[in-house]
Image 1: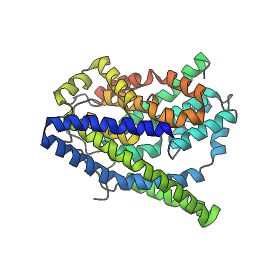
Image 2: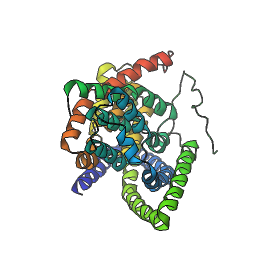
Image 3: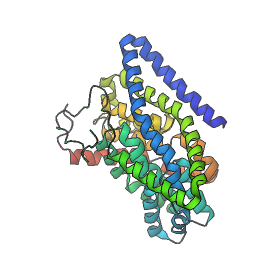
Image 4: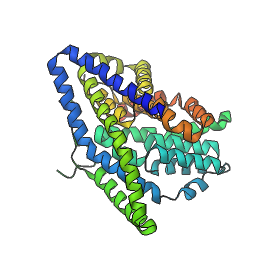
Length: 166
Length: 198
């Protein structure tokens, strides 16, 4: 788990760097930031507790085989559409999304379809919108961003079909 | 304060900056939705696997939660510091509505190098909006973080999906953040033709 450690180091290093800049700007900047950050944290923890602790149950009951069965290499654009909807509907963290993608690939899913699935899931998985984005950002922005993102899994699939990769 | 309107209360176009401080939302419908979903799923797991199945998942997820918690704190602090120290004027010039392609590229680059997970990306994106970035540049940043950012790719995608798929997925995704940002801007100016003042 050295990558996790590395990411932690980069993360806290960045916090220290911007914290140092804030400190140089003066005491009020420093204390305001700390207070705002702490309030955000306190506000967000219950949501994350619910989401993280609960998502294991959601992941345990979704029928993975059903999802992966729809993404075969001959499923064409209908398969891509299915993949996008499935990606948006997939709950849980990165393990769930990527695992379903990996299972689909191994079970003979088409690459463009699996790609569309992964991209759609990354862009607008419904649970992530509710759990992570809405608490942190203005709701208007979240829905706007999600709506604007809808064409892009299709574009990614089209590129994949055109270049014949991955 | 347990319910919020579905749409944010039509922000008067003249000045819709939620300053000072970001609006903190109490328990809302999004959390209730998740809670219901979790309760139903947990019941299903209990009926299928019994109490031990429920406890297994609970222990696993509690461990996960414990590991994430410090990073959430780091993300919140990062967002708060960035909101305080970034000069608003400069941000609105380089990431604002008139920043053009350059603003989208800066947003996308920023999203790609941003460390951490959702606990970093979203507070920082929110901070950028607060200090004058427009929807387009912020979309470029969020989309870039989610599709090109190395954090999730290295930690999860590479081991689970394999190198070949991951690398091609990233290569194909490279143009998407800027396109999404440009598309967002295109739609935004038509949805809110009055713009955000200034």
